[in-house]
Length: 131
Figure 1 (cartoon, rainbow, N blue to C red):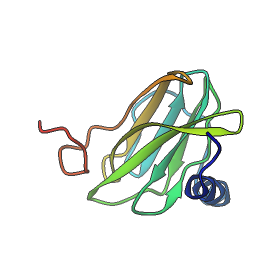
Figure 2: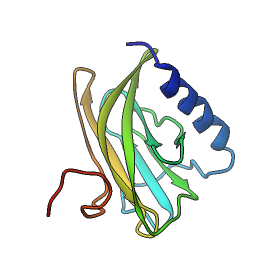
Figure 3: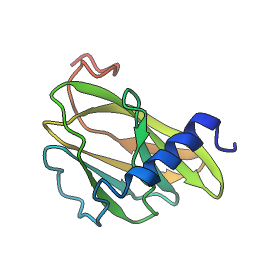
Figure 4: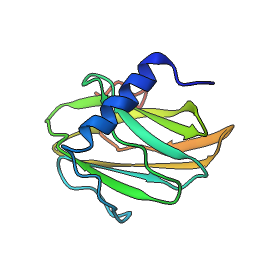
């Protein structure tokens, strides 16, 4: 599938915003408050969109991790995780993020068999988790 218009627009915004947010290499350790760590452990690049904010992180290459700072807030908010292989973007997972806790997203697999781990923010971020 080619980039849908809204995904392509979000990716463009992500690269424009990357100058504002830190995209430095990161270790797989837990993220600090206001920081989202994105790790691409699969065979594809990945990025995260903040649905309500209408912005996204820059893409992280396979095998890499990056910290993205400036995502603050006390309320849980929905995020969507996407992968990129060639010029095709595909949805990997959805989850939640809470700025005051920070968080980490890790993607795995290969196109056609993808999955991700997203931050645990409780049950008020639009997830189906009832715990």
